[in-house]
Length: 488
Image (cartoon, rainbow, N blue to C red; front, side):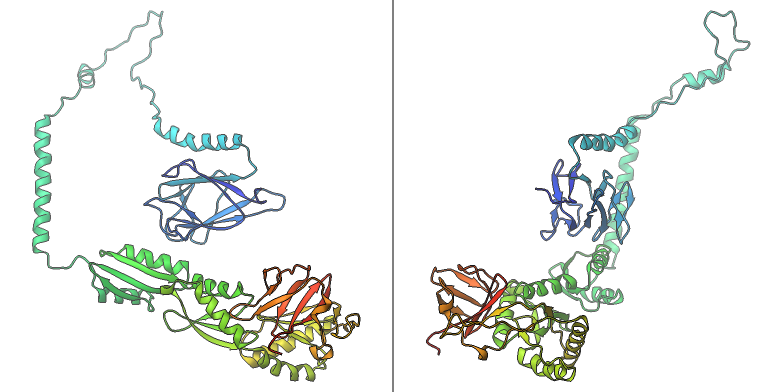
């Protein structure tokens, strides 16, 4: 099923003639590089040629705009602006020699036929040369009349117009062209023989050119006859400016640069996929990045950094500088502030990558709790993600009496010291193993592995895993499942 707001993109020239693709709402990078969303295998298309953005509308057809990245883009034979140009439905867009156009995905085949006819019409009209009307200098005599011309045309002018020009001798033309070619070749040989100025730039000259252009963090290395530029640029605009600079040189230059925004986004995604949300900053080192934020414990920290580095190839792994605080440091800074503001009744649930405050809070209490967390982050010097959620009923099952339950007050669940939960309170659940590093999951009697946030065979959601207990949720009821093993 095609997503709402999608468009159908068709290619009308180039090696991909006739190809169609459905583009959902969002941004799509077009170019010849393998990292692009739409890859065009054409020599005139740059690695990251243009960025197409599809904008959905609730009741109207979708809209689109296109922004050049590495090279120029023509829309209706006009260059697109550097910050983006609206791309109307059916308007031809030229990338190199590849022409593209789009229509809403819901349009019928008749609309495409009209578009094809519209695109073909300018080409037909340009090919057909309109024949100018024959100009008559002499009066026109209608048939059947007795009128005769009063005077004859000038005989000399008639002879000059009626007599075709005399063709030149082909042999003489060939001789002249051959002499011109020989003269050009001789001049080229003489200039090459006596020229002492080098045709290209040296490694030192290219380094100076880059510094004068503002690229102070890039390095230049020579690989045979090729100069290789390595390093990192801030964004796509800087990369396009560097590409134009390299194209203007008279020496072969190879670019091996990374876009800082793409690199930071990739590192952040490697942590976000684990439920962790640190801040990523660039350091002064060429491949160094600082990771600042909160993680529950040192075990979570070590496992998270090991898993994040595994997402990158071995020869392209970033140098990560850590500035991580754990739950004990956050709690030590948070408790005095809560007591000072009269909010010491609030309980904090320290998750692997976030602090959860659950309870029934008024708007004033929520604002006060947010200001307390802001002061806590300022005191710690790193961002601490947190959420304020409504409290749910918590059921604690005692080991001696499974029927003895207590209802939680409108705040977070009480500490585990208030009751001794037992795994016998949940029928059909047998935990056979618990793994805390590098990733947290449990093994059940069916042989399945259930990670944090996963669903157990009993229908419970596994909210958190600890070395002594599990936190389970089902139908709005939270159950503390106590683990028993050889470590007790």
